Image (cartoon, one colour):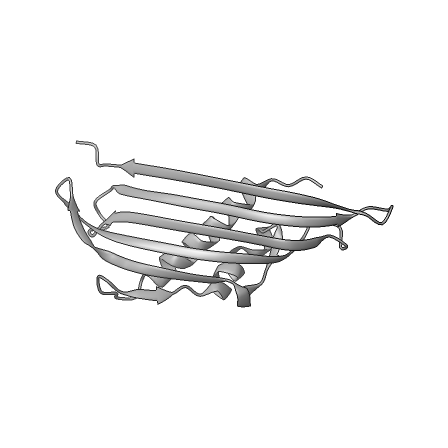
Length: 160
C-alpha cells in the first residue's frame, strides 16, 4: 500500500483555506473566536482526500487575534486550528483497521487590512499521526505507524 502523507495534508489545508476565506467575510471584532464548520471543509475537498473523515470527532476554530502595524501597513492577524480524525483510508484494503489517524493543522496569517495592498506574512504547522493494522493471510497483522510534521513560514511585501 502506497501512502503519501504530504499530498493528503495539503489537500486538507486547501479545503480549509477555501472555507476559511468564505467564513471570514462576516464582520468580526479583534479578539473574537468562532467554530469552523467541519462539514463545509469536508464538502469542499472530500472527493480529493485519501481518507474518510469522522466529522463528529473532528473540530476547528478561527480567531481574529487583532490588528497590528507591520512595516507601516495596518494588518489583521488571524489564526485557524483544526483537528481531523480519519475513520478509513479510501485506497486501503477493506480489512485494514485504523488504530488512530489524527491530523492537526494550525495556520496563522498577518494580512493587510486594505485588500488593495499586496503583502502577506504567515505560518503553517501540520502534524499527522497514524497507526494501521493490516491483516496478513497467515492470520497475523502488520502494524504500520506513520508520523509526519511540517512547518512553513512565508512573507511577501510590496515591491517599492
